[in-house]
Length: 461
Image (tube, rainbow, N blue to C red; front, side, top):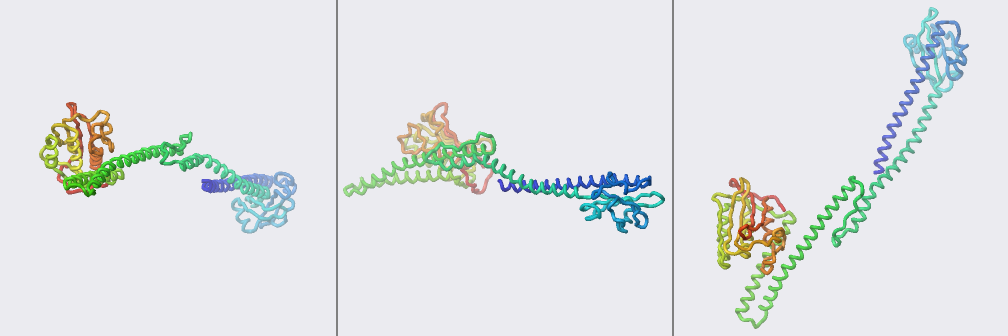
């Protein structure tokens, strides 16, 4: 920042120095030219009066030794009159005299006899005494050149000094401004996932650095929530995996005992197979949730007839319902189609139906209804006691289970997976208790208004 600031200041100071120098030089030139014109007018008046000569004008405004001088040139280039110390020959050459007899002419000379340093001459034509004369006045540029040399010295010395001072000031200002960044950097070095809740210091000002610190603190807060969620997820997953693994190990130990009867051996192997299936299903559910966290759940959506889908669901769970003394009723308008991935839709509705059969009582009603032209709602209700009121806000959390369901075999992932599947399709899921009793879960998915070819969606979370 200091280097950029110094380079910018160098350009600005250089441009300003050039502007000041040439403006000062222009003013000096204008002042010298005005003085020459004024003296030329005086000499012309003197020539017209013809009552005094230039040699008697020494020490006046018309002439000063080494500083101001004048000359009158007649026809043929002959010098008619001049101030003291000037040579008898004309100061102007033939070409210069020719131009001066037509219009006023300014001429710069490096040396003029009797003048100190370089000089500037002004020649104007005058008609007097029946002749066409040239009035020539001149002045030394010594003071002019000394003034320019002095301003150059001031700019060449003062410019770099001003640049150095400005750069030091810019460095100090930048250091003070970035002190907050250094403080945040040192605090960031001490941040650790093992100590959540730590935040970066926020500067007291309301500038960009303060807003950056607040934004980073908000990000850290979100990361703390995400890390805590991941830790909880890993802990809950480990807990859920421990029970089936322990049972599987016990059944295998029984099978390995050599004195088991064939029936006991079959029972042990059957139980081990059931626990293996449970582990496989749990691993599949955990994998789906992990993909959802990474935004990597992909779906292949096709148009599915809602009535056919619910009929297949009823056939799939008919024996399960009969085993618990329940019935499954389905209802869907003819021709209603939903745009969804068949496997994911079957998984979501299967989870809801399984929950209803496990926690409900009596009959389970699965309905499909159109909501406008864009959505389809799948409603799953049962005749059971419904969700506990304190469980409703946590129903879709992973491994969330009500007190009544903690003794079952479920891992508390069914509703979480339903919501993941719904959001992967661009829909949503909701839970509630019916006023007349029983749990009510609604799964909302996009409606297929016309027949669509299979379409693979982009990854979503």
